[in-house]
Image (cartoon, rainbow, N blue to C red; front, side, top):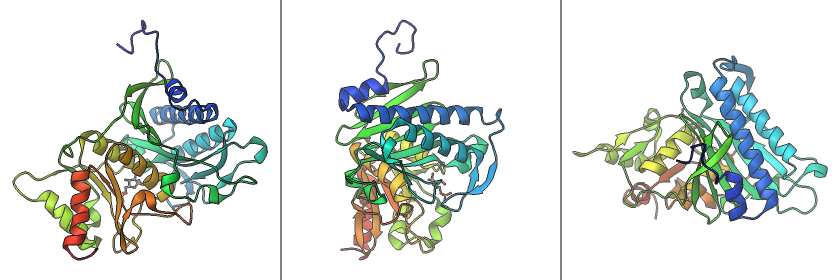
Length: 339
Ligand code: P6P
């Protein structure tokens, strides 16, 4: 067994990176990211004992009340990424402004991250996660926010770390497929467990995942789609954790669809393009799924094709296996809402 002390050949994240990209600077960046994930996992595991539950008494860029763990995890990611010497620009959900790294300590990469997504769940011990996307800078002189305000198609790495029963890192390098790593706390290493993770061929389990509390404000196509999932002798199961990493991880592994659509109150939806929509869309597409905004700004919009103009911009998110996402998109056409 891979966890027996007799093991002598460990496929760690670092080894996988060197096998895949042979890019030393990228290996250092991902080593820093995995350290930050391990430190965040430890803080979440010890929160109850270390009195880390509860509010920090501040609010973040989104206006959310920051939890102590939000602030701590954000500081962990900013410090490890800055000190890695591999980053030029950082964007965090918790920071109003982008962080431009001092050119004397800067590197090639720009990282957008949500350090502790779903943290409203943390005080009741429901799983949360970190979501991140990595660009290679394009500027030659001083790095600017334009190095990260780019189409999702320019991402070179996307990933999330789920702080659940196990601490699991899911990562994809562009066109290299989706890979899963599980933290072995006794080694402090992320050990490779699955290669080329893909959606179940037939769309998998019939599960739909959305906050139906918003349903009165949905557009007719979303309403019709969810009614379709609920109808018939074998309706879909409803599963909604309220933590994007948990809901998307289950959708990729079991099948089904996750939706956070635009609605009458939130014309651009709730989720953020740079550190929620784009990374999850890249992972879902690399796993053979579909990631769309649905009808957005007058057209049926593939999520990765968006070009954000501000770092906390929002977008609708409809992602999952082809069977279910295509069903939703077909409703727009059926109802004459899109060509
Ligand atoms: P709602 C958590 O705040 C988050 O950003 C995602 O992790 C999650 O999917 C969504 O918002 C939950 O939002 O409105 O259903 O509580």
